[in-house]
Length: 220
Image 1: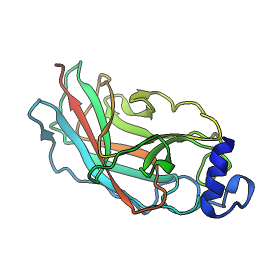
Image 2: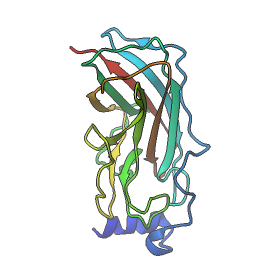
Image 3: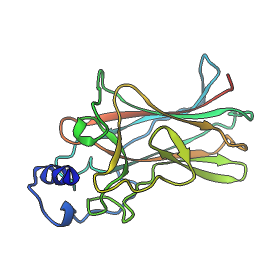
Image 4: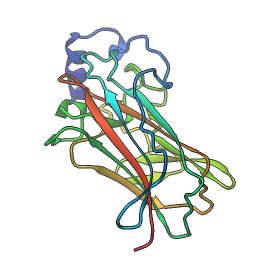
């Protein structure tokens, strides 16, 4: 559908520039956004350990070049040295909107929900030349820091997914949490810092807070 009618005539700017790309700052860590602080790990009733938790406020963009469109957020937190896990544990990352009863009819910014962005037309603002965004979780291991790429469908990989075409690829974030889970690689180590980097979009309406949680779960 011709890139969703050029993304609704470039979000009612009624079209400008090649693919409606505006001059945009390169992807980096913006001043916007925020992160939570956990002074100590949280041990849950099922034996899991929460190593990170916080939220970002994603502004609502009206046009492609405004904050809220491919909005880069980051969080870093210390992992207390007391966190120790054994082989066989699972790493779990969740994202959800901190708004009651926000349901998402489809996986696209035009659904009214915020999204995590996987790829988009490189002609659009804040999009890398490859068209593929890097949504990553970097964790400390005995051998050094290691970055895991979050992918659509709730998996992790060593690299981001493929370019999905000019219409883009997104996962909508509503009140019901979306979850990524993977066996935790050996050598995970507390006493150092993790980093979570995501690219999010929210169109129109009100800004939305996105809550993240990172936890490690023991074998069942």
